[in-house]
Length: 239
Image (cartoon, rainbow, N blue to C red; front, side, top):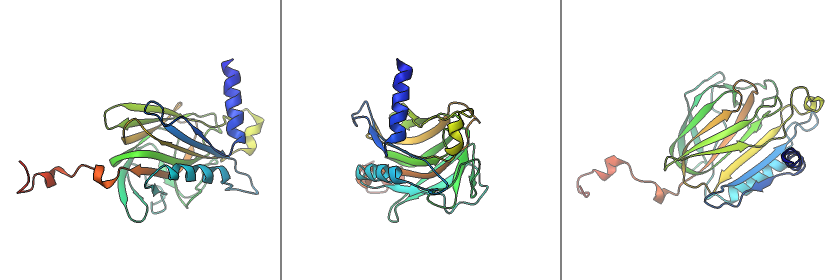
């Protein structure tokens, strides 16, 4: 019975431009998901992606983005990231397996710019300040049967584990030949507590090479960010 439910879910994911999963309650974050299939005629058809990115952005007060455009091809971790909307900036450090690429590789490719972070193993992103929401675009995930999990470390020490869905196409499945380079958006908000880092953890290390094309976060409003200790300790302040 469970296998039938999984098949139904995959069919829905393949046919639906995008879905929101969850109720956004403290014990169940709100997840936004879309998967678009690439074709030679339409290499970057992103209807479902655009819809879900828009819905994700509507839930956030501010969305800061890193698209890897200014990174040097071949760079590896630790890699300094700058997530920005043009007015506000949040720094982060990406560390772990992978490198910056400017050319498509085994179906993994850039969508929003000329470069992407490519990996088939675990890597972590540590934020300079806590974030309330997280979203990202990846390409070519799952065409080799690989599964990706997220591990978000929250400010209270909890680790929230989430599985990134996709239509699974195994290497010996003849349908997979035309589905190389599928594009996925995954976003999560209404977290139980703000997150300080996220780990991208494949179920099988080295099995499925994919591209992280765009990383998005919603930062805490400025008034919710604690001032540095050096400011609190200035003369004239409460000691």
